Length: 598
Image 1 (cartoon, helix red, strand yellow):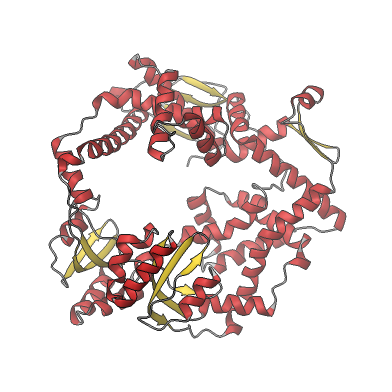
Image 2 (image 1 turned 90 degrees about the vertical axis):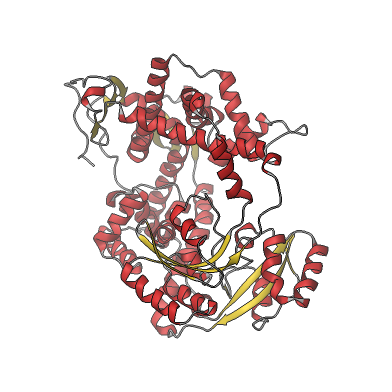
């Protein structure tokens, strides 16, 4: 279940080093001019290359320049990265995550859409090259290994937390919980500003040494079970901790994991060293960015950069962008073409007024408003483009326009009913069931765990079972604690089971998709005292937004399902049912498939 995060850890070093550096020569460009045909309308190769460069040109150019810098510096120092070293690194990474080589490469393809060749060329080669260039700065000291060992295998403290931004309020809350420690859970839910932990009574992941804020760690390890910490100030936040128990250290000999810990320390150091190394390389090189300089572009047509006099051409940049991002960008271009075609068929259009309305709506939802409470479009444009790392024009084209187009096609179909309002009121203001949960991957194991829970009905024992058996990381580490279950919250099977339980009662086994869940009821929350008519406007707005987004998604799926799409870059084709065919397939003799079907 945790593999995506492992994958992120495995790939993060190279992604931080430089945006996907490349070693091999450019992959040959597709041999034909048509990348896709959408209901008889072409998307040409030049169009796709231009779209790729517009979206990814700057980051890809940076990586091409960094590639040249690394290659120059490796040659200067007589360093090479061999194919054998790259293959050995594939094996090492697979073994690190207890996978076979082919399983690891398949996981990369499925989870990150990174092929084996891209992984070796764009991730492993730069990582290995930088390790060699920065070898002297990457050694793990005995003290660092000792701290890493203690952080991973040492004792930890099970803790609840209340965080507030007002120091006086923190001291007042501490006095209350010192006087009545059993109220800590209730007060955390009422007052803590840390939303994630507040919903489960302040419970957080066990605190380990050398992994977070030193003041928090010192306070946690100074407590015995049941004790309350002093107020701990971290930045502008003030925290109160309650010790729920101590988790003993794991019995793992240091000698068995020393090499693995040292390797991880080197990887962490490499992330910091890489930036300094690039700064040094760039400082000693002569780099001209022609791409972002209109004057230089006129003087050097077809060139996007020079590195120590070595030219990087627009053709290279376009080919590299197409190779790395072509399939993703082509999907965007196909989607936008489908929307333009549907707008034309429907006689609808997206005006600047509607684009502004869509941005205003997004700004309002995000709370970006002016002093009068109206959406601040200028501020929102700055926030949105910075968050997405795109230009204003790109933000309008790729985010605002598609949303406005789908809204124009669906807004007249959405209605908020009385039943919707009643369900929304129950979901947001009604009582909730406080439960602990154990999530398992097989019915057989669920039956065994359920029998254990039945034989020992204590809540503490259920927490022990959750910590040992739950495959859902959060509930496992928090001894089964989950946010209170509400009605109409999107989990109908669990909701039905939870609302039948009495306090202390154990549920049966509930299958949810491919998982098996056992609940144990801890009680119910009080409904919020508010009348439905007092919150009708808020509910109606929220429900309308959700139903509209659902209708937009369904409309796009319907448009796509009814279209003829031949994607020659990905090697895929889709045709609508014969009775609803939107366009006859067009035979194009110039078109040849560029890759196998996927």
